[in-house]
Every structure is written in structure tokens, then in C-alpha cells.
Length: 340
Image (cartoon, rainbow, N blue to C red):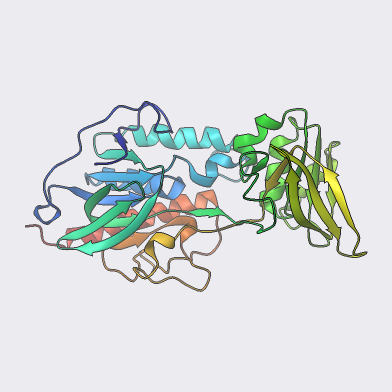
């Protein structure tokens, strides 16, 4: 079995985690996992807890724990917390999951899940590193992945000044000048995440005004080291060994200019992480997994929850609720299935 399997006790990365013994046998005999959960964000972790409470044997396949929630700076709309950082909220989730470590096996897969397929008696989940797991049912909670700009220098300077996670990489730019590309909540959250670290922050917004929650806009506008360039398009990122500047175009005047920066945070939203299930379950035109009111996909026995689905709105609290729904639906479905 490739990857690292562990209980949820110690960390949120695969480095140095102990190997634990997974169940053995074949899927048809029911001696493998009851449920395989793809993804370790709020939807996946909530689904794992609900499945574990039903005494189902669960394996969670994920690159990390927390998903996009862990990247958030200040979370002010999660019930029970007037304000909490994404990292701290994720830690609460992890601690809760740990209470069910006898039922939940965590497997970190750095290359992600590459495919899910139907096999006799269940499903086979293949990972990008060549591993595979089998389970009687599947819950897809793969979330979203950052949307790319598609400009020169974006790929070349990735991890050399270009980043898609201000919350993760902000400390690397302490005392430096950075540009944040975008004008919605993702960009606003990024700006606030690095406000106390970076010397100067320039938000490059292609539209005429910022589009996000009013409370976040107010905080950004009030920050002394944040400026906003509206009607401005990012053209290219340049540098030597690391990022040194970004080329911009004023949409109103058509004039181009260079902005000296040490880092570029690309925050233009995200797209569903559903490539691994294209052709296996129904997706809508946005690439989201289509689910019914019980969170069942078009494939019987495969459920989905969170930002990867066509659920209305994408919020941490909604993802958690959807994870609970998917687990309940999955448990009810499993109860109707024969076991050899």
C-alpha cells in the first residue's frame, strides 16, 4: 500500500508519521473499508466523524488536513466562534476526528487520487503515487484547487515568489513588497493575512471595484499598507532566480507599467478538484459533481460533499453540513447492501 497510513493523532503532513496496519482481505468479503473518503477538508473530516459514529471502517485519502479552510486567516461566520483563524478551526476539526481513531485511518497521498472505479463488491480508488484502496462506498470531498492566471512567468516562478496561498506562505514575505491578484474574497482574505507581515501590499483588481464581503472590504481599505489598483490587468511576472516585478496594464488608459515586487499572490478563485472522476460521475458545466438531496452522485454508492459539488454556495460551515449529509446518506445506503 503506497502512501502513509496513520491515526489522526499527531500531524497534518505525512512527514515522519508512523505506519499503521490497515484491514486486509478483499472488498467483496466486506473485510476492507466500508467507506473511502477522498479529501480532508471540513466536508471530508465531518463525513469521517459521522461514518465513524455509525461504526463504519473509514479510510480518508488526502494531501493534507483542512483544505482551503486551513488557508483562511480570520473566520468570523462559523457557529460557536465569533472569530477564529482557519488554522485553529482546522485543529479543532482534527482533534474531534482523533476521538474516532479506531474507526478512521488517514492516508496522506502527496500526488492525490488519480481515479475511482467500480469493481465487484465496491470501488477501487487509485492514487497518483501508484497506490490503491478498496471500499464498499465512496464519499468524494476533494474540494477546489486554485485557478491559474495563465500569464508568462506564473509557472516559472512558482514557489520562487509566486504562490496561491497567502496564509501558508505569507511569513516568507515579511518586510517585503507583494502584489495580490484578484478582487474578491480570496484576494481580500490574502491581503489581510499578510497585512502585518508585508511592508507594502498592492491589490491588482481587473474590475472597477472590489467584489467581496463588505466587512472585509472595509478592513482592506482601512489598512495603511494596502493599496488597490482597480481596472488593472496583470500581464506577466518576471525576475531572475526569484520574482522581481509584475507587468500591469491600466484598462482605462491602456498604459502599461512595471511594479517592483518580491512576491505575487494569485487569488482569483478556484475550480473544483474533480479531474479524477470525470466520466465516472456526472459533472455540471462548471466541473462540479452533481448530487441529489442525499448527496448521492450519478453512481450508486458514490456520494459527494463540499466545494467539489454543485451545492449552493461554498462556505466552511456549508461544507461541514454537506459532509454530515453525505455520511448519513452513505450509511443508509450501505445498510441496504448485501455483504458476502
